[in-house]
Amino acid sequence: MRKTSRLLAAAAAALAMAGCAVSQTPRSDGNYARPIGGSPVTANPTPYTDALVCLGNYARSQGRTPPRIAVGRIADYTGTVAPEGGARVTQGASLMAMSAFAKAGVNLVERFDTSVSELEMRYANNRLIGDEAEEAGFRQIYAGSIPGSDFHLIGGITELNYNIRSQGLDAFAGDRVDSSPSGLFNMRLYVMNVGVDLRLVNSRTMEVVDVISYQKQIIGREISAGVFAFFGDAVVDLSAGGRSLEPVQLAVRSVIERAVLEFSANLYGVAPAAACRFNDPLGGPTNRTGGVNVAAAANAGLEPTNVQARQNANRGHDSRDRDLRGVLRGRYD
View 1 (cartoon, rainbow, N blue to C red):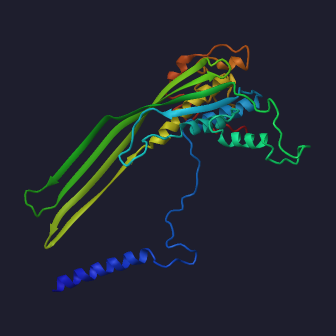
View 2 (cartoon, rainbow, N blue to C red):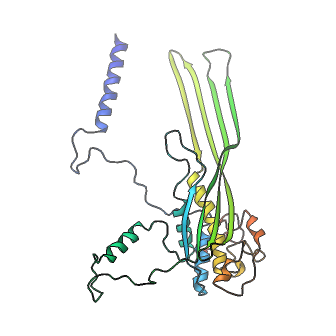
View 3 (cartoon, rainbow, N blue to C red):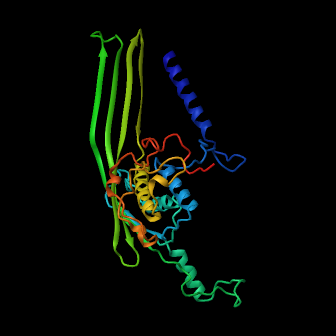
């Protein structure tokens, strides 16, 4: 009877605590509960962000103007769907590419979502939008007022490979006597990857002037441990663990930023060894920016570049490139 009373008391206490967590009466601010959390908004860089910023700062300081770039559809071609529904891979790769070009200071023209612009144009064509600056009192449409793009970027996310390699460890220790303490330890490691294929197209001739195919591996791990034991009439069962996976979408952003870094250096026609006051942000004086020299369309007289430089996995990475570590890239003070 005493044990039953204790169990009922414990259950009542748990219910009381659960009832206190969410009030059935709105608080003074009109909400039933205050959300947890409060982490501040932070930047979302990748290991290649600083190199992009440095390249853009150098190009501006040298008065180099790149061609206008439009970013088209960079779709998810992996076709993978999560069990709970929805795509496994981000559908916003085009937006990531726009952000990367902006970090590099490249001139962008909007071609991805023109719905608002087209609606404004339609309203203006019907003289429905007023404009005090215009003598007629409404917004007028002028021929040639919209700048065109010189090149546009398109492509897609083409790979999402699960479990390229995995390994695990299971360990159990205990006495033959059932009442003696026993312990269990588990560890799992696994690797997957994502890949993208991007191409830069001349908007006037539809000629594909540059192509990049990059992949990035992603690592995940899972660790757990537990102890089970009898102490007299009491039973103790303790376990703890954790799992972590490198963010898949951040890996996609990293791959895109590395590709945009290569595209942007070509568009600026920047020699890597001269790109920063401190050091080369693209991998040393002996490395030339990889790829086809598309910058010749805007900056005549540039010599061709070396495509083999793109194969250097450390180039432009803020912790793997020796020429980048320990400097405030993009700063000129």
